[in-house]
Image (cartoon, rainbow, N blue to C red; front, side, top):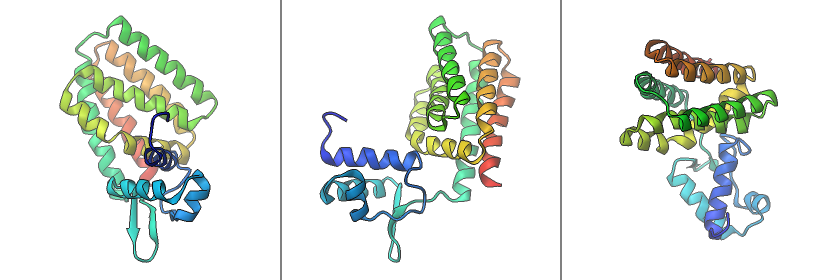
Length: 211
């Protein structure tokens, strides 16, 4: 975080703590506690909380004060439905093109890292590679509007994906296998099966959280 102001450092650290679940949804955020946690003064922390509230990460209520915002069941469903519509389309289209050697190398390295973190049940690092895998597919497809829309939701998508793995620790192996098979189906030019697997992959994650 070199070069960042104290306000920016406070914001980044708080956002990361919320994203990785160290500060869980619904938990109250008091300045006194955060001063001790972050070892910072109240001024940058107050500015960080204001920014996080504006971005929808924390919410204020007269009875509780500030707390980490909880995603409603409907919001979770909406996020997964959005991903199915967007990524299913992108994956089916990618099957009609050929990955470059550089792209193949990227996916093979990414999948190897996924396998490594799957073996150690490192949910946070696995979720980072998981997010990178999906982001790379969007990037390769090359539609600017789709890419920007997807990027704007990356933090929320990361948070939800991490919650899926923590709720069902067996999911990590299926998630890795799905990624590997989606990649192979795209390489084979099998648009129909790649699309079906992408939808099943996301639908399964949704069901874990809503049931």
